[in-house]
Image 1 (cartoon, rainbow, N blue to C red):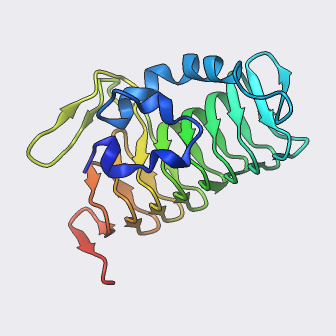
Image 2: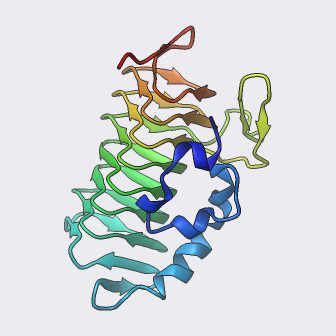
Length: 220
């Protein structure tokens, strides 16, 4: 439920090579910055603008004048970076993804089609294909006691060795408005989080998280 192969379709991101040789998605977090700098130098000049050091933006991306895009970052084709979006650093924004008003990104990979459209904070996280975070939902990436993050896999917790780990959202994951994903949260493919939830641990694929004591399988 927590491995890269179980969460993501790697054909749906420009950053597929970042995941090569790794088992768990949080293993890519330390490599996002250098990966962007290497990949950026290979992007075709007829498809990507290079407006500042370490920043590459697809020519058909829509960037609002008030948005801030820090270095290093790659904004892929068709992405939309809206009013007052704050891309601090180390962000890969996939094709046709939406980064909305007052949303902040830091050390993240957003796969193609991801939507973080309203007042979101996404830090030290990976969001899979067409994952969506509702208005005001955030990834909390540091524990209150500043200890190293452990992913609470049932019966077999996994130590990440990192102080900062946000959330890993599988393809098509849906996070309800004003929810908090605690450090090391993993949300499986097609899983759905109820609004105003406080989530930690692993939410299985194809499930609905109503609260920590009520996680049910989706009915198809």
